[in-house]
Length: 307
Image (cartoon, rainbow, N blue to C red):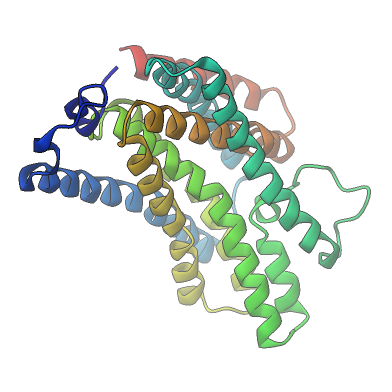
């Protein structure tokens, strides 16, 4: 397993005076800059591109988006289960600590989503007791429908601000763990953007395209100009960068830090994949085809990891 340069230089916890030399600091900065650039393309670029597509066409093919999400969910599952979690165990960290990190990642994202849902769903007219427990559209997952409801009612500026803030928090809940998987994988690859780290960056960029469309379309329909909607949509990808930095910095402080970073990010990503992305893809296109695309995604993930 490729460990980060700083972890290797620690030599199992022994102090190394060369760790904090200007050369090593310059190397760390270069790694961080590379990570920020890659994650910005995946987060800001992918979401912004989706926002632009939504602004230009104002509609999307639910079948295409469903299959794209299914495929991405499959690849993410393979990378999390057969790369990130395995790498966490290879740090020789106790398996129960790794399992606990995964459970914490799942629990944190679930509870924060539950809190936001309970605070906002009653304000959206079509959501009732008969509504599915999972969202029926992407705009519900990121709560852009909540902001649109306030825009349609022409609420006060403060109400719109609060609704926008809630939407930003909901998006951050998805983008931060996505970024953490890139950052943790990047640390695991020794600060190199290759293998699973590169694939995750590309996948998350593709996954963010339909998410960007789901953000921009209701904003435009609610009266916001196309240019401003695309800009706001692109900015919603910034939390991905924050997550990537967290995942990398925690994963770069030693074996335990790497294991916790990998396991927490894995748990958060597993919840996002199985709790939201895959149910959403099936709701958008009710057929057996999404299941096949998940399987294809898992196989592609395995090939990426082991070839």
